[in-house]
Amino acid sequence: MKIVSTVVRRVRQTSSDERGVALFIVAGSMIAVTSVCALAIDVGMLFTARTEAQRVADGAALAGAGALVASPNNRELATFNAVTIGGLNTIGGQNANVLATDVTVDLTNRQVTVNALRTAERGNPMETFFARMFGVTSVDIGATATAEASNAGGITCLLPLALPDRWLEGPGTPNDPDDFELEAGDVYIPWAVPDSDPVRLNEGYTGYSESDIGTQFTMKSNTPNGDLNPSWYYPWRPPGQFGADDYRTNVAGCVDPSISYSVGQQVETEPGNMSGPTMQGFKELIDQDPDAVWNDGMDCIVNNGLQSSQDVGDCRPSERVRPIPMFDPTEEIDAGTKPFTFTNFAGVFVEDIQGQDIVARWIGYTGVDPTTYGHDGNAGPLFKVLRLVK
Image 1 (cartoon, rainbow, N blue to C red):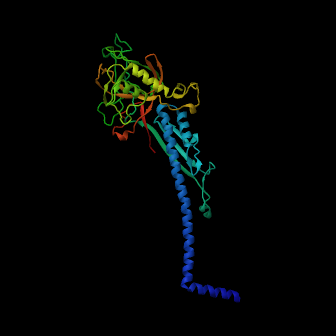
Image 2: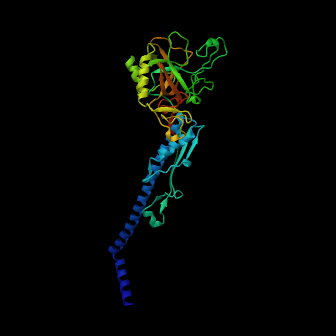
Image 3: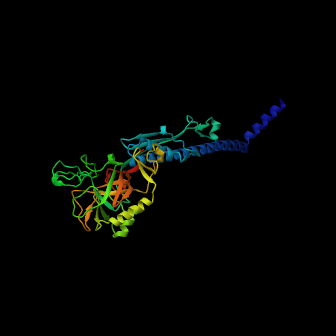
C-alpha cells in the first residue's frame, strides 16, 4: 500500500506542475498529428491512383473511338484498341487491367465508354499503409470515360489534288454514266445545308459517306475539254506554292500542316494535269509503308499477307492514309490557274499505282477539333475528331 500511495502522490504532484501538464498535451498532440499525417499519406496515394485511373480510362476511350473513324461498324476493333491502350498504363504502380467487359461501344453515336478499375472483386484493390491501424486495409479505385468520334471542323495535310463529289445519275437519255450531265438529269446535292451556321448535314446529300468506307476506286488524270468524270483528279496549289517540285512533295508528304481547310474554302488549280509529278509523289508515298494492304473482312489496314486475317490485333495505321478534297461537279474546274471551292472531303488509303492511275479506298479520317473554328461539323461526313464527352 505504501508503494501505491507514493505513486499516486507523485502523479498528483506532476499533474499540478505546469510543465507536467504541457508534457501531456504535447505528447497527445504529437500522437494526433502523426495519425493525421499518416492518413494524409494514404489519402494522397489514393487520390493519385484515382487520377491515374482517370487517365487510363480517358486514353483507352479515345483509342476505342479512334477505331470507329476508319472502321465505323467494327465493334471488335474499337474494343481491342481500348483494351490494348488501357493496358499500356499503370494505376498505383500496377499495370492497368482493362478487360473487354469494361468497354462499351455505341456504334450509332460512335462512342466508346471505358471503366478503369482496381477493386477487391478483381483481387487488385489499392492497399493502404497507415489506415490499417483503423481497420482499413484496402480501398477500391475506379474511373469512367466516354469518348466519341464527332464531326471535325477542319482538315490538315490534304493531298494536293481534288476529285468531284459523287452525284446521282439521272434517267434522261442520252446519259453517259461516266460523265456528269445536267441536261440528262444528273443531280448533285452538297452535304452541307446552304448558309447553315453551324453547318448542318443535308438529308438529301448525294456524295460519299460512311457507307462507302472500304470501297475501292481509281483516280485518273483529267482529260482537257472533256465531260467531267468521277474518277478524274484535278491538281491544286496551297497558298505560296507552285510548280512540279512543290506539288510532288505535297503528294508524298504533307501540304503545309499549319493550314487548316474547311468546306467553302477557295484555292487555285495547278495548270496542266501534273500526271508525272503525281505518279512520282504517290510512288514515294507508297514507299513509306510498302507492306500496308487492305483487309476487306475487317475494313482496316494490315500487313501484306494478312488480307484474310480476322484478328483485329492485326489492324494498324499507315502513312498512306491521307485526306483529299472534293468539289461540286456542277461547277467543273476550267483549265489553267483558276479558283475553285472545296465542298467536301474524304479520307483515302492509297493502295497501288497502275500505269497512270492511282488505286485507292475510301476511308474515314481524323480532322481538327471544331471548337477551334467555331463551325461544328464543316469538314465533311467522313471526317471526325476524337474528344471526351464524359
